[in-house]
Image 1 (spheres, rainbow, N blue to C red):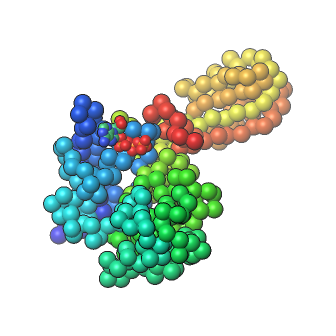
Image 2 (cartoon, protein in one colour):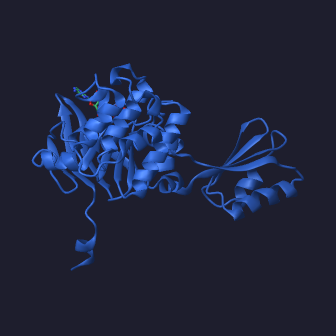
Image 3 (cartoon, helix red, strand yellow):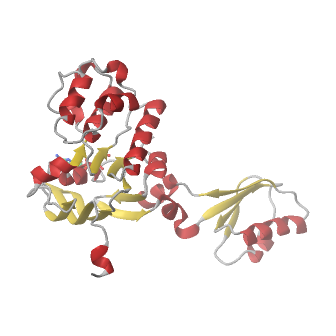
Length: 313
Ligand SMILES: Nc1ncnc2c1ncn2[C@@H]1O[C@H](COP(=O)(O)OP(=O)(O)OP(=O)(O)O)[C@@H](O)[C@H]1O
């Protein structure tokens, strides 16, 4: 058998996916692969096509073109089998909005041969105190966490989490992050949509940035933030220094400027040699640079460069 055939099947494979709503193209030839047992974060500005993509994968929407394989299955043709093996966060309590929290989770667990203990899961998500509260009387954040619990109680092989921490406070968000880490530790594959960069950086093995229904960048968070290897060196020194000599001393392609009076900026890949060039120049002109710091680009900067839009706060 060749190495290619030995490779584990991806948990999710999307090829050339297209979805239109009338004249509007919501997903425009999207390709994406989620390796088994990993966490993939799908990032994109409002209207980028994240929810549409996830709903096609879950079998709630039909595609206009392209192929989607969820655990090797066609979400439409093999819907029943796929449903048994995946976890989906339903909004609004799914079919049981009148049921109490614990009761609802037990109902979801009953579909599985080997569910996670519902009481443990309620505790892990900080919901034990509202176990007897009907779903519709829970706060938004509690409903959100209960939906997450319902999605994973059956030990799915792959779970789709559409903005799982939207609207949660910092404490609840950490509980959800810990649970997602634990899922990954148990070998569960996770597709997560989020607009929170720290969430993607914290949890995802791979980040896929989409805009206008297409992939604009993909890689590990570290790959994406080092792409172009651009970072910057900033320092403070007396205002109005002549930068000509520094420009000559730096390798080609580096830019230096004084964007604010006395605030200097060198852009390009800041290597130890570049840092030494800058400090040698300071010594030569007898200037003491203070507040010298190297700043790397964050995932938010990369996102802004690629899409021209900031993520929602
Ligand atoms: N039922 C619908 N009818 C018509 N247009 C739709 C429908 N659902 C989504 N769209 C449009 O398709 C595009 C993609 O929407 P989608 O909800 O998939 O994006 P998203 O990335 O999930 O955005 P958000 O982060 O705001 O949820 C948008 O332009 C949206 O207005």
